[in-house]
Amino acid sequence: MWSKTYSEKVSGLTAEQVWQVWADVDRWHTWQSDLEYAKLAGRFEAGTYFLLKPKGGPRVTIDLVDVRPNEGFRDRTKFPLARMYGEHEFIRHDDGLEIKTTVSVEGPLSFVWRKIVAEGVAASLKQQTRELVERARRS
Image 1 (spheres, rainbow, N blue to C red):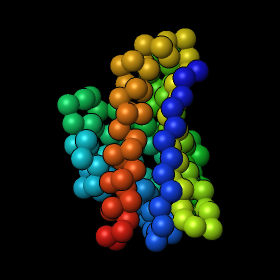
Image 2: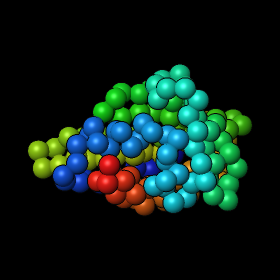
Image 3: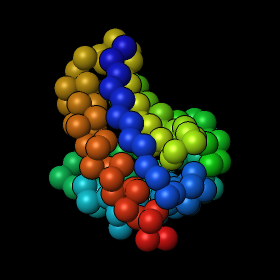
Image 4: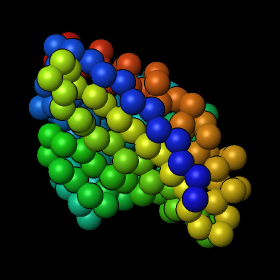
């Protein structure tokens, strides 16, 4: 299994403020500069999925496998003979809120999907986190 983590601590924001942005999947494209659209099929809860269309990439279906309001969520993208997971979480500190995202890939063809998709996703985590924080500050 391969994984990559990006973490950033911010001050002046609550987990609840950031959660409101994360849970509003249909509006992700308004703050994520690399997305064409995202569309949630139901409620933001485990067992639901959403469609995501990156700019210049194919549309993918992503399952929500674990959702803990105001704490974090885990999603899964299925590829032939591999799965990619995104673990998104909040860690509360006395001096701020840490926003942590881990991308991992597992399965027999994980090395292929790592190169095709996961490394690019991991490379965008810093920018994505900054855009998330900016959007939460404006909300």
